[in-house]
Amino acid sequence: RKEVEQDPGPFNVPEGATVAFNCTYSNSASQSFFWYRQDCRKEPKLLMSVYSSGNEDGRFTAQLNRASQYISLLIRDSKLSDSATYLCVVPREGGSQGNLIFGKGTKLSVKP
Amino acid sequence: DTGVSQNPRHKITKRGQNVTFRCDPISEHNRLYWYRQTLGQGPEFLTYFQNEAQLEKSRLLSDRFSAERPKGSFSTLEIQRTEQGDSAMYLCASSLGAVQGALWTGELFFGEGSRLTVL
Image 1 (tube, rainbow over the protein chains, first blue to last red):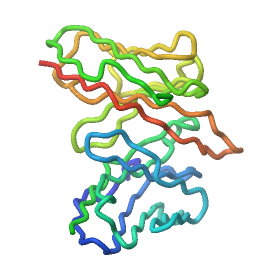
Image 2: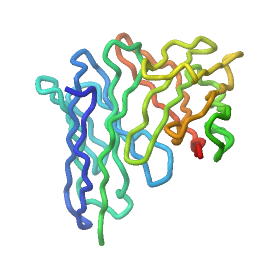
Image 3: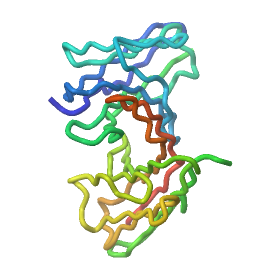
Image 4: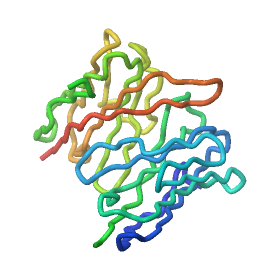
């Protein structure tokens, strides 16, 4: 299993749709998980952190399944402004704390 | 602007030349990271510092790459004898060393990156 693997997308959805992305990881010891958002030609920015079973912030919900070693990101009521690439981030296996590995990203395009 | 600052923003060079990038992190952040990103890929870890100490370096990183953070503030990333495969966006990020027990809780703040094109 790769360290971090994501649905590559692109996901093309209409405004108002609900969309979910999955990310699988290999580091079974990991306690921290993150979703970063990267707009086109911009730098990544933190969207959500996940430390236990999940986290919710408005229209965004992240869920963690430790047994199956995957994290999901659910976006409800999609907005045009949600169009971006979503990066799954986990600590590197065998690395020191704070050594974070990024997935390749899942591209989301929300259409009017 | 108190964010992470990188320069130059763009660098075009010929194969075989040396290039150096500079990163100025957020002032109170003790951790500084270098990542490389190519089109369609996520950021790839290169190395990171805690204060002036280089704690980890990617095993994939060629010895043509070297990074320093001499006074625990700004950092430089030098690439010697550049190759066309080095063309990428070089991203710097900084964070607080936020550890709670065994949990890493820090947020990485990225600069806008330095784009390298090797001809």
